[in-house]
Image 1 (cartoon, rainbow, N blue to C red):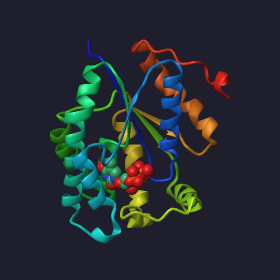
Image 2: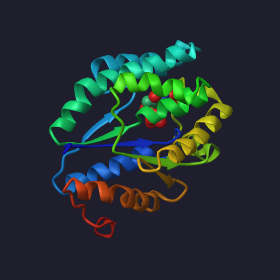
Image 3: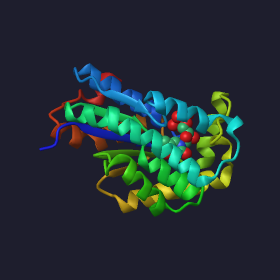
Image 4: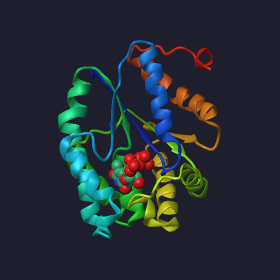
Length: 221
Ligand code: TYD
């Protein structure tokens, strides 16, 4: 039987997925399970350099296929050097964005086509898909409002415009229909505590199978 557990967190920028990932990581640590946390693009020396190119507004407009392949290159390095060894050690790996980000952002957002981007990503990951993907779904307008309230500068992707994010948001919903067993489509409109309860319900069966029992959420409130 395969060891290890790979859980990805997905959603449009501002959806709150990173907050939820951090909360789950805290709860795992509270019961003595140290998860491996990785972010995409990045997570390796090569990946961090690629991340700079991809997110720096100074990079400007690049060919969509080049963009998709840069994300895939960062992912390939991460899977080979970090994710696979951690899974082989039986660890829980939490990844902030993974293949579905490329399907939504480059496949739909940049209109390359989901299946073509999937093909490149199956090469990059050697077919490694997450055991569970937590999709924190939030209407792009609401997500944008949350982002604006943080006051952070927009990166190159965040500058892509409303149509881009509408396409990415729609694609995420399509992906959840395509992989209903893998992707938990969670309503991200509620408070962080409300969303955390939905995340909890999605992750529990997987953690139970991996022999990990989290404390009930109420105990942490
Ligand atoms: P980041 O600052 O990590 O954003 P977030 O906190 O929202 O994850 O920047 C990653 C950006 O790159 C984000 O706008 C989404 C985008 N992206 C893609 O377009 N394709 C991908 O495959 C990945 C992993 C990210």
